[in-house]
Image (cartoon, rainbow, N blue to C red; front, side, top):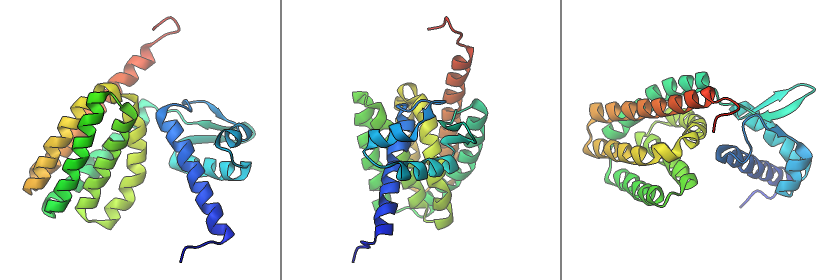
Length: 227
């Protein structure tokens, strides 16, 4: 039987608001550095201020929002330094996830990954960048699930939420390359080649790192008169 208590309903509303705000941040609809005004967000989402306030706390804990006493909340800025730290962790965790997924390979897991890649190819070819970013995250989560390690999965979801924010900065340039790199990784996992799967996962993250840092360098070099 579903939990119909007021507390459960309130929790669900907070989660929905959190997801809505997080998605707007990932898509750039709420820009980095933008102030988050509770009344305005509540009106935008059609809710009261309470779930918005609670959601801001959740997003602050996830690193998407910065809260400064007596000033308020703003969307966090994604620095090159933070990106470097994230990629360091991704290399270790996603390399291990790929190795374990290859070790525990199954036809069902391989088929699931291939279906995701088919959808990603279609999204890349159609230029649906938001969908590409969502599918990119879904693919990496699926590799983690295929690894069959509950402790690993606890770390992957919050890490990949941050990684999607990074990916969204370079989705137009990275989309086609990311798809082909995922395909190569999927083949190694399906073949049960642990060393190759780990190597391809690490190489994929390294390529994403280079793309992000290149974009961050260009942005940092743009002055007021730059296009």
